[in-house]
Every structure is written in structure tokens, then in C-alpha cells.
Image (tube, rainbow, N blue to C red; front, side, top):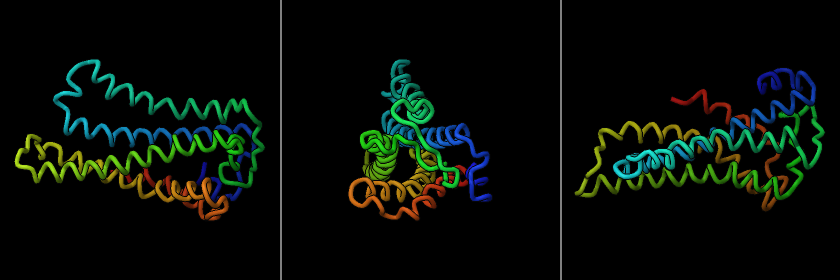
Length: 210
């Protein structure tokens, strides 16, 4: 879909249905990816430092593993199905000459726009950053400690893989997050011309995953 737009420089097919489907698919997949990465960043702490207590019983496995993953998978598709597909609060006028056909009309609603940004973008990106920084600090502290009850050979590869993947998410999503934060809070016109290129950069994440 985005490659077709950049190749022809317009939306094809130019229909409202296609724009609704593209926007819902785009927002949903981005949300799923961010929330899954955020939860995986938290879950690594549980697996590495608390595996002997957190995941031993069935209810703990459901609480700390299955339920969060299910939430990550259904939250964004359900939310954007309501806001984009059903769109009960407004009617979107799609522009077939713009990337993603422009923006859905709920962006004009201040509360919904800010909630979407804070909960679906800012929060997971911050969780990814803080969780991985904390993981590195805990790993260094534990390795320097004399009481090394953790088998680091077993977890070394997992920590390295997580850091590589999370670095991709931070590298591609952090500029978008900072730009949108400045636009919402301080300067609405801040880097509007560059924002589309930043959003397109997120398509490289699946291609660069190990």
C-alpha cells in the first residue's frame, strides 16, 4: 500500500473503503508491534530475574504471560475499528493525494487525539526505552555482584536479541514520538514536512529484525 502510493504519488484505488481499510490496518499493526515490544521488554525482567516465582503456577502464567499478550493483540485493532471504521463521532473526508489518505477525523477531537498519542505511542515507546535501560543496569549490577544466582550463559543470547530488536523500535519510533509530542504541546507546525518520512521509516523495522 505505501509502496503503491510512493510509486504513483496518489492513492489507488481512490475509494473511501480502501482508505478506511488502509488506515485501520496501518494503525492496528503499528499498535500491535509497539505494545508487544513494550510487554516483551517488561517480561524479560520476569523471565531473567523472577522466573522461579512468577511463572511457576498456571494463574501466574496467565496473568504475566498470556493475558498481556492477548491485550497487545486485540487492543489496537479493536480501538481503531471503533475510531476509524465505525467512526461514530465524525465523518472523515479522505484526500486521495495524501499519504494514508490524510488523517481520520478523530484527530480533530483534542481528547481522542491526545489519548491516542499518549496511550498508543508515547507510553509503549517510553516503556521500551526504560525497560531496556533498566535491564542493562540490572545485568551489569548482577554480574558485578558476588552473589550470581542467575545463569548468565543461559540468558545472554536472549538479552542481546532483545536489545537489538528494541533498539530498532527506539531508533525508528523515538523521532516520531518526539516530533508529535512537540506538535501537540508546543508548536503544531513543527517538522510537518519531515513527519511523513519519519512515519515511513517504521516500515524498515520488520525488514531489519534478526
